[in-house]
Image: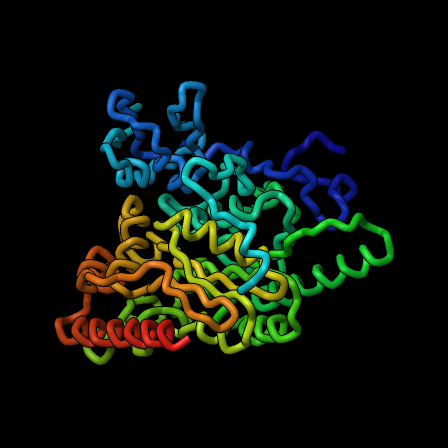
Length: 97
Length: 312
């Protein structure tokens, strides 16, 4: 195949244009859509997991200590976690730079 | 009572599966309530599923070629025939298992559609699949208009809502008809399980979807999904609106098990509907008279549901 990313040979495509790798959208970083960034106050956090269950981007992951940490590579900054946090431990601050 | 329900204890807040069926990196809008509802539903079903998805927001955002956000077998079909393809998949699996070509293992077949795919374009095909009695789950993610193509009205758009094809003005108040009651249409098919759910009550939603999968025969779950882009609401308030819709009785949560109505969340002290209507741009033009009409109609519909629950 020619060394071009834009033009793809028909022979290099999978049969029926099937996508053979499950969940490969995770390679696409949606974090650069963000204009506000969630900041968590670990002192106030009670590890209830509301931010995790209400996150539409599946960006929160639990660490070894039980805290839910946001993955900023995927966070789109919608602010649902800050709005639904029962202890107001999450605040949204403007993205800088 | 359905025997499959006896073993099922329900999800607890501590025992929610951590596994994600829909991966990060999908192209949903900020604060999308629909992909959140989809994520919770898929969490409840687990990995042993085959998903047939009709055209709509959830198909567009999860599968921009060459990416897919799905970690399970998934097929995109045309707007109307998600239920037909799901019944075909279910029948084909039955035949192949009988011939010994695939191992005999139970796999849930799930069809997903938006409110347009369910209530307007695909209604006839869903009706056929329900009538034939295939063992599958139909999940309707109802965001109350055709959001994917730019907010056109659908049969499920509520009374008074502004969309691009029902604009308000001097001669019009927006959508002039009441929301089509699709769960009731599904109840009329005499299928074993019908439920309505809201992503604000996530355990309730997950239990209902899991019950729908456990039932032998067709099951239908109608999930209310807030859409910040189409409704003109703030992205961070999606879950709040989903909760307000239940608390104001606009979208009551109930399940119908073999014709028996059970109200999952009884609202004895409802909030006024104005709390739900304000904050959404699609209802901004409504006057006092229309809001009174909506309040009366919402109360009447809820009373009817309570009576049905008492009767059955």
